Every structure is written in C-alpha cells, then in structure tokens.
Length: 130
Image (cartoon, rainbow, N blue to C red):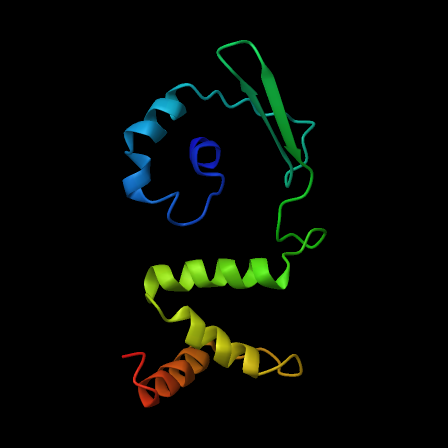
C-alpha cells in the first residue's frame, strides 16, 4: 500500500528489496493500518487515506486491472510486459515483443524460449541483443 501511495503504481521496481528499506516507504508503512473486510470481494480493494488536517479520501477498485472482467489494453499489456522483461533482460523487451507480435493471433501457445531465441538471433543480426 505504501509504495502505491508514494509512486502511484506497484510494479517490480516498487516492490524491490531496495524500496522495502527506503526510509520514505518505511515511514509511510509505519502509518498504514490494514483492515481486512470479509464483505470485500477477493479481487477488489478499498483504500482510505486520512490526512493530518482531517480530510479523508477513499478509492475503491471493484475489479483488478488485468482480470477477465477488466482486461488490460494492448498498450498497458505491452508496458507491463516491457517492465517485467527489462528488469531481467535490460533492453530486450522491444525485440522480444516484436517477435511475439509478429506471430499473430492465429498462432497457438508458443514456447517463450523460442520467442526469446528468435529475438536474440534477429537482434544479433542487427547489431543489437547479445
């Protein structure tokens, strides 16, 4: 909850070991109180922020982004894919996504290792990926 409030998102970078011990994250975490609600559906969440001046703000998400009922847009999916791949293979997401997208919708499940190998081969041919 703390990283979401501080950074407005909660990806790999925000949940890293480095952020877990970040003084700003730790200070806000100490002020955070989690209250499970049995009436709240499993894929929903409500966050209420009470400011020092007494104001209260509340945000509710009824369906998680990326769920069947609230799928990610193509742009959001590509952004998420890039952030996950680049964390492990810096700079490789563009080549890998290009190869994966070139397969088209008519292709069934494909081994990810094949896609990565094809992207790496194409990248080497163009002087890119190692």
